[in-house]
Image 1 (cartoon, chains in turn orange, yellow):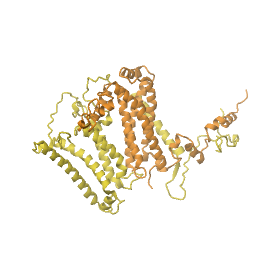
Image 2: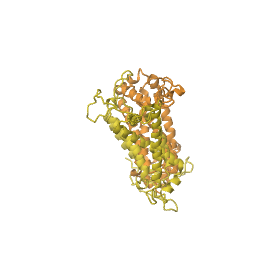
Image 3: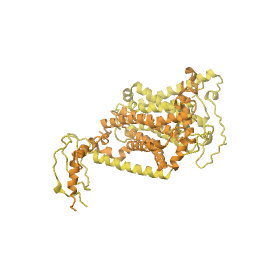
Image 4: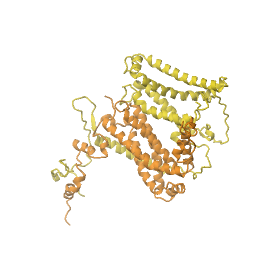
Length: 257
Length: 301
């Protein structure tokens, strides 16, 4: 058997039109390739190709923005797995949690990772905000990106809150009841709030009913929260994340001048 | 085993292929040669050195991602997400707690009515956070940690975030039991515990028994509180000596006020005084059992 010439095989592969259409530069560690690795890659080009030295240091960034994004990605992936098995109807939702735990391969692990990543994301987003405040990174020209960040903070909380209802157990419906009851007290728009008689709102037609999809928490609320949780808020958060990252890319990281 | 390394004779300079003129380098020397930092100076200036994102930043991000994923996986293997009894709208648990990240707001319900604690206050928080970059005109401390040059801003944030938001979440999570009564960790949650609520409204305490007078009294108290707050803030800032910690304003207090302008001063003052009001209401409740300061048929504060 003739000895295989690995280098010749490799050369033929990397010289082929298919390979060259996908990979446009080699691996050699040259300054040019280092830049091409970032600028020629749609995912990596969220970064500038060069960064200031201090922005790589953990003690400056705490890595919290990146961790928030990573945990978001974890919830997206585990969330897709959960969506295959979960039915957002009052008859099945709770049973599906049990099926996930006892019947589905890795079901409980996926649910655990989804939940703990979501909690971790809330904490990471707060720490990220705290770090950005402490380094004054919201100061000009980055004011608006801070505003986008606050919107993302609110969206993170809303994502977590809408997901809280989906297990459809006592913990979820009462936590969401307590949280949503605040809407009942909205001035003018909630039937329990001050000046509610001005607009004539009532329990079936007020701010809380808008959230619940009815006068009380029920199957309609479950479906509503499911759609908000799986489609609307992730989409909205992704849009704002795109703006958030783009702004960092354009303005650069803040740093001592 | 065919070695991929040290095969210099295999170098074939290839003409640029379909990649639009990108000269391709052969994939030799991909061994574990140590990457060295090649700092790039920005042309013609003494500006901070720059690093290539690949590999230096991407490497940190990659390592951090691995660490986080490992921690998360181990955590998820050890600890199951909670699942209680099936939902039952006719059976209200005591206590019913909001998700933990909203417990600070639920704790506010001890001191304020729901329309304020649950709607107005969170709106102030969100809008106030968004306004921070437009209210803070101190150019110092942009891009580095400093306490000395920004201590007023940092103290404000500390009061709002760490004291009000974070510590109230801890209180709501660990110290509140049935009836939203205070229970120490380890103390048995007694659902029959009765705590006498002896709170009275401030106008009543002052001997006012008439609704109209009480409402006017409350309005005067709250309006007066804001007026006093603004006056204190104004004169305190005005009296900042030159060369104070706000070193960006060598003219001292008057220069700060002049550059800040009335709109920024007004909004910042409102947010700070409203935030301080939470502390004052808490103190009044705990020390003097005061329920409301302003009592009207429509709203109570």
